[in-house]
Picture: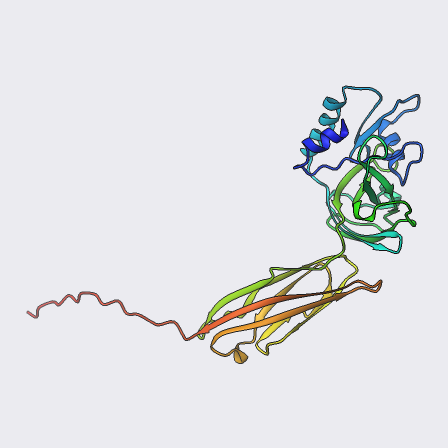
Length: 312
C-alpha cells in the first residue's frame, strides 16, 4: 500500500520511508512514541508524518488513513528551510545540512529538543516497502537559533556494508517540540540531499550599454552548494569585475564592468568560480559574460508645425 501511495504522490513533495521497528535507526521510533503520547499496547505497522505530528498504528484502512495523513501535511506551510548535500566518504555517507529557522521561536536542544537528522535509504525491497532506511545519523542543535537565523552541521553515517551505492539516497530534516520540553515533535522542513556540487547560475549574462549610460552592473550570479565551501572568483578580462571576490557558500556575487577599461563593440569575458572545502571538496564553474558597448544614443528633435501670428 505504501508503494502504491508513493506512485500516487510521485509529483508531490512527499517521501515515504521505512525503518525496521525491531532494529530502529536514529531517533525515528522515539518520535513516534512522543506523538502517540501514552503507554500501552500498540500494533504494527507504526506510521507517522512530520516526525510524529500525527501518528497511526495497527490495522486500519491503510490507503485512506495514510493518504489523509499526507494530505493534511501538504497543506501545512513549512516552518523553515533545509539545504542539504551528501557525498560518499569511504564506506560512509557524509551529509552537509544548513537550516534556516522559520518557526517564530528560538530553536535549541535545551529549549525544545531541536534536532537535525539525515536519513539514508536504499531503493531496495527489504521490508514492506522499497525504501528502507540504512542509516540515520542526527545531532541536536547545540546553539540558540533565533527566528530567521541559520544553523549548519555535518552528519556522517557509520560504515555501510552490503548496500548498492548506486541506489542510496539521503534526505535531511529538522524537528523540535513546539510545546517545549515535552509533547510530540513536529518537522520544520525536509530537503533531499543530492550529491555535493557547486552551482553558479545563470551560466551566462548579457547586457547592452551606451557610452553615455551610467550603468555598470551586469547581473548577479547565485552560488549554491554545501555550506562548507569557500569560493573565489577570477576573470579573464580587464573590464570585468566581481564583488565580493571571495566568500562562503551560499552567496550572491554581483558582476560589474569597469567602464574606463571597456572597449566599444561586443566583448566576451569569463568568470571562473573556484570552491573548496577543508574536507576535500573542490569545484570549478565558469560563467560567460557578453557586453555590447555602443555609442551614445542619438537625439531626435521632433519637427512640428510653427504657428505664425501676423503683425498688426
